[in-house]
Image 1 (cartoon, rainbow, N blue to C red):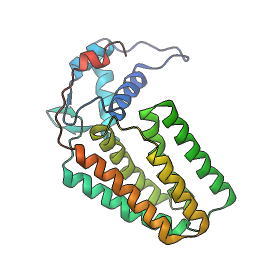
Image 2: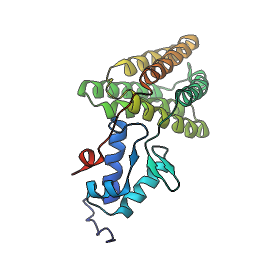
Image 3: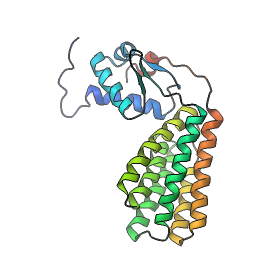
Image 4: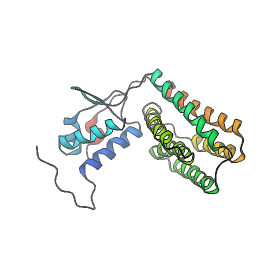
Length: 233
């Protein structure tokens, strides 16, 4: 096997190129739940070594974006409805606490940060960028956790958000609406006004809506041709 060549500093390394392409395909819903990512096929598609592919798959597995099975390989996660419900339930519990801690306690800079984020979400919707919408929607919730000043909670929530971002991409990949930014805006309104009941309801209904959309599509069959998907990426 020929090692990867040195890459000029102004060019993307093979590892990052492959990582970015597979991550993008996951977040855009181009890879089906349960699909196997075969090292040999990916190496041919990306015109790189199997060693590069192996490192990228290990990285994605550590991030929870792929499932790695000993002696079998790497697979796109295929969560059951029960798995999906459990993760969203965990988010409901964690984020209710975050909302309670922030209600009527946002600094002026925190308010500006949240408003700026909601505007960024609106711009992504207008641009029609599904991947960017998913990323920004998840980051809004992480921003709330950051503003709450609880690093351990933020780290745990990041794991939950990463899973639900993937669920959204796997089972609700083509839905692009402004509901997330609208719902986020209403939540920020309630937090600023100190209306805890409205803020908690907004968060609960927002997460429940996301869960329902994912569950409605869970179980649908799709297939993948890795060669056509990644060749030339």
